[in-house]
Image 1 (cartoon, each protein chain N blue to C red):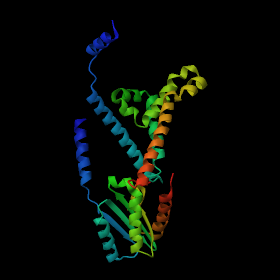
Image 2 (cartoon, helix red, strand yellow):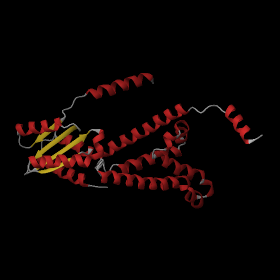
Image 3 (cartoon, rainbow over the protein chains, first blue to last red):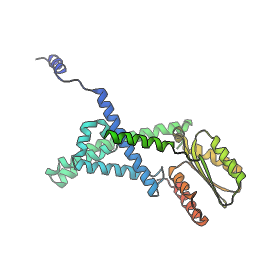
Image 4 (cartoon, rainbow over the protein chains, first blue to last red):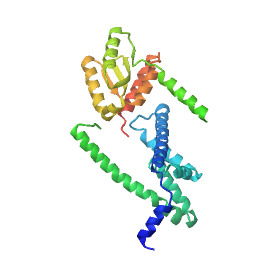
Length: 151
Length: 133
């Protein structure tokens, strides 16, 4: 069987991907995660001395921590299966990537297994996060210089 | 489940109906003319949702909530209003902020009777507003 024949056969047999539904699920779950994040921000601002400018750090830390606990309990996997990118794109996906790698390599020992592989997935998140933060800052610098936005 | 969803929707709708004064002014010395002038000035402003204004001795603190699109240039809005108030009240120490924290805390101040407590709180808020990280 040639490659093209195989591909045609595969396309005929495999069920169609429900793009619209997947998009809706990702939008809904991603939105809910962001709403929870906003709620946590308000909590820190109302009960602690954080302003809108400083509240980002504890909020992100809390969201990642919650995602890590949920991953440990095996609940984040179910959410990921249902929502796809909706659960992976928000910052909670980072916590999930760190802990799921740690769990996977636990059998290889704590130093070489967990320690060496913990950031196998999350490493790319850190790398591309830093790179995209650089470009976002660059865009903002340009917008501020032009006078469209302010720091 | 469906019943609770409907109840939640109604509750949210009713919460949305709650009416609050757009501009609240707290004064250590009552000056009705001043109060009305400020209320008029802020009520006319298009980009402002709500504002709390606190006059205490030589301090004037204005904490406002701006409309979502205005949040892109908060600093500009703050500077604009600061210079506006400084022109009007040359002898006062003016602080203008669009931060939610300051708005929330000043909303609580409006119910406070003890002026010393208000003064301490204002100093604390001014310190918070300057914090960068």
